[in-house]
Image (cartoon, rainbow, N blue to C red; front, side, top):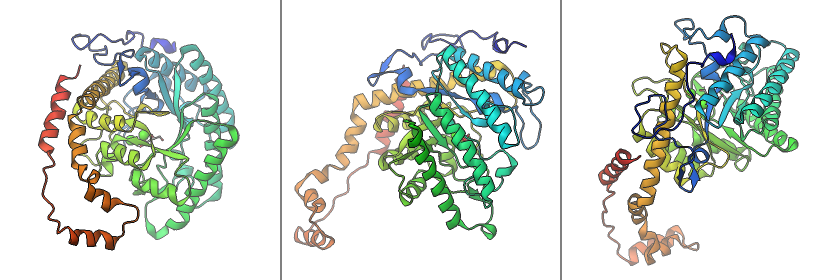
Length: 443
Ligand code: XLS
Ligand code: CA
Ligand code: CA
């Protein structure tokens, strides 16, 4: 089979406007339309991920693969990997999205030894460079998979066995150098198995030190090779391990501070990981902004009734608008973007299902950008927020916040002024209604 025939039934996806009846066209994502001072394509920086769409064959813990992708028919050898890379770039072209993302093992033949790893990864990177050149698609981020191979059952950087840590170092060095060579904007570390199953066999202090040292070495190597992109940690509270050290954005910030890396590393926030940590997606973005470590986004959604990582395509404009407001408040992306870390359901086994998944999600995010931009331009919500803190601009607020004030001086001021703080409405319902109004009107 010719790789380009896998999606041959599907016409290139283009913008046809909100009123089109074409289900495989963009209704809101008009890549050249300027929103918040930038072309939509440059504001949103969409990426398609390799792993869910091209590496997963539809298996789950109760059953085998359902997708029958031709490149999964035999062993994952060099030919199958080349086929898969070609199909993937054809798909990026069909969707006309600017970026993609990959793990080392997503794009290469399966290997066991360090020698095979080096050989097959080098071959894959040469081919990716050629495909990027031919298609103009760019790399949003690269990463190394230190969680799928059985050697990583007890972690990568935090493994009790130094030989496993060294294998991980080989993969991370290779993937970081490949990301640099391919012009990637970021390098991601997601520590899926950097955590534990039971404290009975785990020394947390030691493992955190291993993780901190490993990350310091990654940062050192980034500077050594001159990689100008951003190093990102991707928080997730658990799954596959019972507890993951990079639990959420706030935990990651504490970790970065402890190892002196808070000015070197930012976060890649995934919607479904935020909800697994019992936060909202927008909470994680707002926290990252407040701490100065907002980097990039993995766009997807979980399931409100299930407590696991379902990685579904985002489909709520209302929820996405709340997240987008925080992205705008953070000043938008610099190196980051929206990577679709999302997969079709196991019963959605046709090539066209992959297109439906991405087209719908692109439009949800594009429409959310229009709604959030309208909210910001309207200004009423931000005004309510600013008014809540207006007391700090008055004489009393300035005295409380003055640099030379102390706990005692503030307390004395309260007594001297005989203060009687008045209650003031937070206007939540009005604000929620305003959001819905802009969501409904966005086009
Ligand atoms: C898994 C993570 C993973 C990272 C990259 O839950 O989302 O796919 O994004 O390793
Ligand atoms: Ca992710
Ligand atoms: Ca996920």
